[in-house]
Image (cartoon, rainbow over all chains, first blue to last red; front, side, top):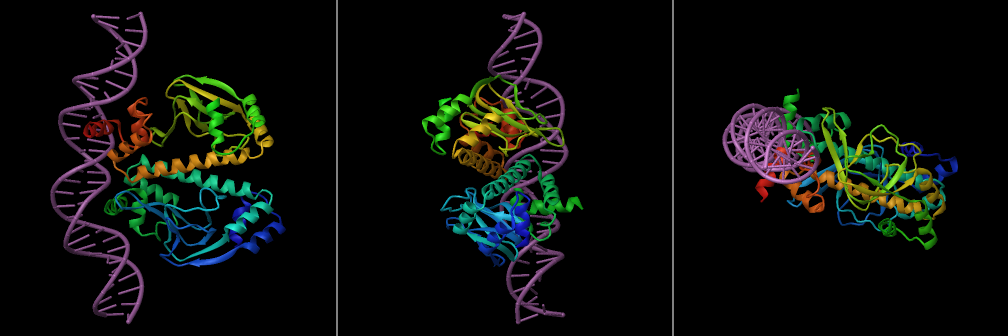
Length: 189
Length: 189
DNA sequence: GAAACCATTTGCCATTTGGCAAAAAACGAT
DNA sequence: ATCGTTTTTTGCCAAATGGCAAATGGTTTC
């Protein structure tokens, strides 16, 4: 919970009353390994902040292959592109790669925060924008790199993930096959 | 100019007074082919909306190769990730692929609009979010596709661009070499 | 029309990656 | 420790892509 507050404070100021209000509306939950946090086609009813664990975001392409779009690790907010939207139905899946802990808010409570706390929307907006930019930059760079560069880059940017994410998922994130990734790893050593 | 207003109206309502105010602050400019709209390291002083032409966004990777991150075609707003930021210095280049026409606003005027028009920020935010999501989706899909799929996809998503953008730039956007693209094109016919 | 310039295609060969299946290694539960 | 399961590595060969340079095609300029 404190992690979440500290995270928010990076993006704007909050006084003790406001922090109290946020805490009063938050619920801490656990999400076990391999459980879905979001499922394509199922309405999202809460906003969450990941305090522990790793979540994988993926979708299926037109060949039915599972494509990992990205990983979410500790201290990241999980919300739909359009926060305000009353009803949001994702087209991708979010699934726990490890046991996870999250701080979650109902859509209604989140809305209350937005209406009560001056600057809340601005904080949230900054967070969303930051995440978007990161994702664009990361995915973008992959396109012009070969397998080895992609993997080296991945290790550099997600050092905490390399050792706790199955290689098959990393390969699917990098856009190469698992055997290629394995060969690449061999050559690097 | 009307294109711009219509574009805005897709994202929220504006009354005649508000539209008048927006128009009064807008300036229409031309940007000739091969001129820069943004240059890495140079402060951006205006917000623009492209009404005619195509702009290419690119950067240099660590090997000094020019990488095209994306193309901007008609009816797209050009602003930095963080609109509000007083000073924004891009790390990429925006250069006109064709002669372009833009509607531009100074940062100050843009700020005035934000402070005067209720809902302006929300409209702008929706636009930014939409653009971000599109970019993430597009770049993301490229990663898991082979050259042919990338090109077919590109043609489908940017039908208006295929015939007016040099192949070298398309190749760099797709993350393949120009010769590969040329061979791919031959095989498709 | 010729020359100069730029964009695109092609040839040749090396390198990388994919596809598929089997082997090896790592992990968990009993 | 052993069995069963999952993850990772390999081998083999086909297909795709890269790198480089030359050839072709198209456009502009004088």
